[in-house]
Amino acid sequence: MNLKTVVIGSGLSSLSFVDKFLEKNDSIDLISPDFEFLNKEEFFPNKHIYNDLPHQIYSYMDKINHYFHFNKISVDKNAKVLGSLEFGGLSNYWGCQMDQNFIDDLIGYNKKSKNEIINSFFEILKKFKLLGSFSHKKRKYENDYKVDSFFEKLLKKKFKDLVTIKPMLAYSNNTKLIPKNYYEKFLKKRKIKIHNYFVERIIYENNGVILKCRNQSELKTFYAKKVILGCGTLATTKLLMEFLKIKEEVRIKHHPRLVSVFFSKFKIKNIFTSASSQLHLRSKKKSNSFVVDFRSGNKTIIESATKLKKYLIPFKIILSLFKNFIIFSNILLDSNHSNLFMKMQTNGKINIYSKPKNTTDVLKKIHKKIFNILRNEKMILPLSKNFFPGYGNDFHYFGTLTNNKKKKLSINQNCQLKGYKNIYVIDGSVFDFKVNKYPLGVIMANARRIAKKINK
Ligand SMILES: Cc1cc2nc3c(=O)[nH]c(=O)nc-3n(C[C@H](O)[C@H](O)[C@H](O)COP(=O)(O)OP(=O)(O)OC[C@H]3O[C@@H](n4cnc5c(N)ncnc54)[C@H](O)[C@@H]3O)c2cc1C
Image (cartoon, rainbow, N blue to C red; front, top):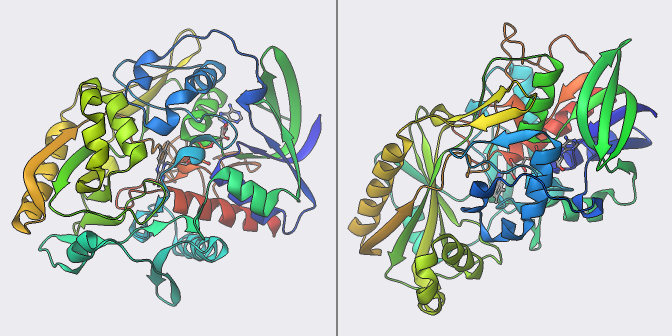
């Protein structure tokens, strides 16, 4: 089948691209697997990945298996990565918070590109009427929200080396920005042809791109003039490693995290229906920065906690009764602490693994610091717990491609793959998020920016 411009993937990066692209074009083709249509088969189980999954993902094991099977990716016991799951990918399950602190993170992008990304981010805030405030030079956006008095108190405090900040939240009138909602509200009536396939291989021939695809045992070949890769960092990188015959190890950037639990002296109101955080506490330092996000306990979190830690099951009723006194937080480290790698194996599969490292020491030190701050402010009881869910369980994967022209896996300012003007990359692969610990806003903004460029 001959196609003009093809988007691969249906996560928020792809949909953000498609949305802008269709302002100047009549139709677009999108290749992305929807696992509901695939027959169930027995695949190799990456069982260890499931142990620490959040509650909302727990029932999708088959889909996760399909993802790894069809993408021919294996995961070592020491890595806890989660592939994209189905139509919409990881974006279906994301926690709804965005970071407005990303300007310093646009490493490798020139002033013009940076400005374009900031403008597109600004347009996204307005389009979806996201909750929160953003201000950068002349661009100001305000759609503020109230947080519980517990967090309000923290928000007003001045700390020597920390700042408190409210995250941008991907809600509009309480609608969560997930692919399904994006599609239903903004894209359904547009001309998008969805092809239910996995892209298995990319081949370049006569200045065009051949996409070898599969749905279960059915094989299909598409010929495309232009290809936009938005299938998430893991799948995109894997496809490109095969395409460019990269045998060396590739480092996947991510944000190692520690799950922390504190016990409040006061009841905390759940402002939002989902489990998104009400407040971020971040280090002022730009190098080795971290973010701690806070939310009070709710049903989803208690479910996850008891699934994760079986010894908590007898306490489930008590935990549910006191859920509004429990503060859950993630401590996220900057990408310098990344510890995930991809490498081509002799059997043709790509393996993902991590190496021995003591990142937990760094994370636990930060946990202790936060505990002391909250104790000094007399906000919590002298009790806390923390848990390291493993490398990759932060679900933020990015940074495998750079603007460094010397590297094989590199892109130019327009996110075109080095040497291939008609292959674009629009997912997290093309950024390194050090200061920004919630990448999706920038990923969506960049995808929108690339669509504008192609539209010109
Ligand atoms: C529980 C959870 C909470 C999160 N919380 C946050 C948060 O609060 N803030 C934040 O910024 N980020 C968060 N994230 C991360 C965020 O979801 C990702 O950064 C984001 O989804 C990346 O979007 P994407 O469109 O690039 O990729 P994905 O959402 O992964 O989409 C990839 C798409 O490609 C498709 N695909 C995969 N392989 C192939 C193939 N071979 N051929 C064709 N199609 C393919 C998939 O089906 C999918 O449609 C969270 C993630 C999870 C899981």
